[in-house]
Image 1 (cartoon, rainbow, N blue to C red):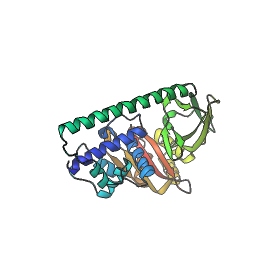
Image 2: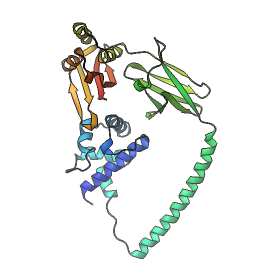
Image 3: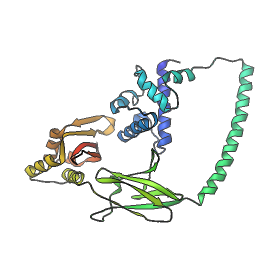
Image 4: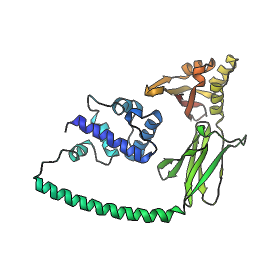
Length: 304
């Protein structure tokens, strides 16, 4: 098997590992979006303790075919993500097997089939008992997330919620505009938003319809208002933007249809905000980072 074919297999294995962590993703590399790329980068950092850039993923993983192999150090990172010590072991373990005599092959296959059937039987019986044992002990709690100042319910489109288990984070589903949390006894849940301070709460089984109160990030809320409102006094807007945006601001705008991303510095981004447009109002902020002085130093936006 050629090395490029091995790399295609490795890409498929990486996608399987990603789907294990994020079971709601049912697509392919072609439909792998900007949020999926961010999730994969975070998964690699947590699992392998290495860093892969967005550009590298766009260049080497998203294409359906590759004309050449990436650097070996990057192949090592992906191989470690799927459970191998590196690229060399991955290639070695996936070499085509030697052709065995027909009788020996049949004997080996028959033995493996019998072993597999017994194993599946044991696993099925165990899963059956565990399922019914835990069925009555799990409840679904609805979380109500509110603004600490206005006491208004926060739009779930501006919220990301995940289960926190050591260093692992599992997304929580949003159903009918509510956070639905499956709780056996208690669960640690992190609530994140680009416009509010992150908060970790303990959701308990015996506390239905638990309310979570988030404190807004003032500068982020001002930026949201600038992007959605139609302010005519651009001089005032310019002075306010200069106050809340860091001189070292970096803005990444993720383009629609997986066309890549655009980069803006403070001056370029401010010019877009000073004169509101329909295109600006169709942009959605998904990530904001603040510096030590609370000024905004990074913004990630997607086009809607």
